Every structure is written in structure tokens, then in C-alpha cells.
Image (cartoon, rainbow, N blue to C red; front, top):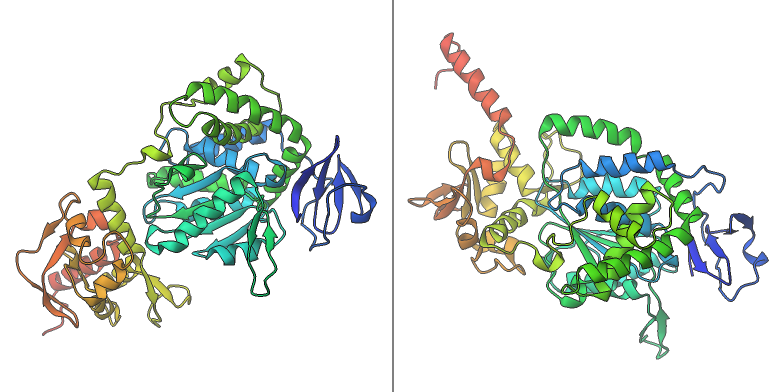
Length: 476
């Protein structure tokens, strides 16, 4: 057992392990004071105030409505995210722990969702991993049952991605798993954590995963709408709000568990052809979590159906096994994979933070700014060119561009056919000259597809035009 708000359901009581202390049915006590069949190891104290006031119904409704306005790919996505967050804070007390897959294009809100919604509402207690292996994630969790977010979970990572999905399956049921050790002694571990995966190109095809993992996606909002929303969100979704949400969830845990069963039965009846009982377990739990934000009422019979209608739950909405796999959707995934590719980068002229890394998307923007930047040369070495007029030029083949797609379903030059499926993408009529590489055949991607900010380029062009009008141009 490990650190987590609500760890075990005992004989008529709920015990909450806060690292170095317990809270049993609201009463604080030392680890050794409780007579129980459960074992509670001493771990670092969790920053949870037992005297904190629970989140109110009004605040919970505000959170749910705000999340709904963030721009989602599906009509139910906001409910699934909100429900998963609530459940993730009490993973150790749940019978089933649904997984969550956040999938969206480059720059459409995947990281924003993690950083500015999930983490604050978990009071900053969640464990965050990036592109980690199964062993790395397990070692990060140790004995804890704190929620886990695995970022950069991509299809291109092959076996690593499969390992991450396997952990979600294990955590869903919470069954013990035994592994061998070099010393010949078996090592048993049991995952009872709520796990979310986030990635750009992260389809789920295994039926064993489809019924255990809810898939959600973000899309971009108009700038004016986004500015207003971001200001409201920064004020409402804080660490203090997260602590109040945890207190609400702990206080009303019996209601949450009862509603999980009720909504599970209702959903199993509404969707008999889409997985039946397990789909009911998964989505019933997630919706019970969303319901707890609005109300602490225990749902019974027709009240459960009435609440589903009130929040706009659509049982016919696409499920995880019905995600868009059309050629156009895959072409967009291919482009997102390219733009999200990272490489080492140090540029003294750049205003980017000194992370030592840069994405292709950021590198393209640097190349468009011109000046003394080495970005055009770096792009050329990757098999790309930022042409101000025609767009982003991507080489059909070559060692550098092939390395970007190695291990993906667009390897061995397969990216060319997929990129040409994008609207207004077209093959260059003749070989184009790339920095370092020289003339190569390529695909032309209009800037509207790439989503790069060209305002610095436009400003420079306008300044050059004005200088020319006043005779201030520099002679060649």
C-alpha cells in the first residue's frame, strides 16, 4: 500500500493514507494506531490539509462547465476528463480504474490539458512521466497509488507504447503481477493507480484496451474565446481548488462508489453491443466521477437516466474503437508526427528558453525569421525547407527524413503518400534546392496546413517594402 487519498476500504471504515499519517473516517491518527489487516508503510507526507473545506456544488459545476468550453473533439470528452480526474485522486478505493488517452494534433492542447487542468485538480500530487518504459513507470510509482500521467506516449515508440498500455490494463483490474528477479526470487507487485496517456499519434487497436480506456481529444478555439477562457481557468483551477476537490471526493466516497455501480448498470443496458459489462464499468465510473462534481446525491433508478440526459451524454457517440482512421486523419497524424519531432538545439539568437531541444515546428518558425539563424541549414539537414511563398517543403526520401519516421507506420518513404493526401498538398514540379542536400524531389505543404506563425515574416516584408518606397533600400 502507499501514499494516496483513500487507500483501503475496511470493515465499515475508509482509511486515508497521507504518507506519514492516517485519516480514518475523518479522524486523524498515527500509522500504528489503527488495527487493520492492511499494511501502511511510512512515506513522505502528502500536502493535504485534513481540515480543508470540501469543494462546493457550485464550484464543482463551475469546473465542469469551464472544462466543457475548452474545445473537444467529441461531445462527451469533457465529462470523461472531469470524471477521470475525480477518480484518479482515490484510485486505491476503486474496484476498477479506467484509463484515459488524450490524443490531439500538434499545438491543439494536449500539454495544456495536462499542465493546466489535470495537475491542479490533483493538487499537484500526480506522478508525471514522459515517454517512459514500463519499468521506469513502475519504479516511479513504487508503493504509491497516486495518479500517473504518461506524456509522449506515441505509436512510433512501438514496444514502449505497448508496455504503457499493458500497465493501464494491469491497473484497471488491480490484480497482482509476479515478475522474476536475477536472484531467483519472485517479485510481486500490484498496481492500483489511475493512469492517463497523452500523445499525438496514439491509436488504440487492441480490444482488451478499447473497453478499459476512454479516448478524448482537443481542438483549437478562436483566439478571442481562448483568452477569456484561459483567464477564467487560471483563477478557478488552482492547487487550492484541487485540495478542496480531494476533500470532497474523500468525504463523499461512499456516494461515488455507489453511483459507479448504478451508472455502470445503466450504461451496460444502453450499449449492449459495445462491450456490455466492462464498458459499463469503465464509463459508469468516469461518469460517476463527473457527477460528483455537480452533486453528492446518490443516484437511483430513473434519476441516473435523468442525469445522463441533463449533461448531454450521448451513448451513440463514437467510442474508442470507432476513432477516425480515414486517410485524411492518418495524413494529419503523419504531419503531426513530423512537426513534433525533437532535435538538440542551441541558438544564441533565439528567444526560446535554454532547454537544448527544439521541435521541427519551432525550427521552421526560426527559419522563417531569417537573419543569421542556422535554422535553414538545420532544416535542410533534416530534409526540409521553409519556403516563404510555397510552404514547407518535405523531401520524398533520404537518410535524415527517414530517421524521423523510423519505427512509425510511415517509414521507408511512406510519409510522401500520406502527406499528399492533405488538402492542397502537392508534389513539387521539379527538384528543389535544399540547404546541405542540394536539389531533391519533395512535397509542398501550404502554410495553412503547417500552422506556423508567419507574422514575423510578413512584418519584415512590409518593412522592406516601406524602405524601398522611401529610397532607403540597401544596394546589392
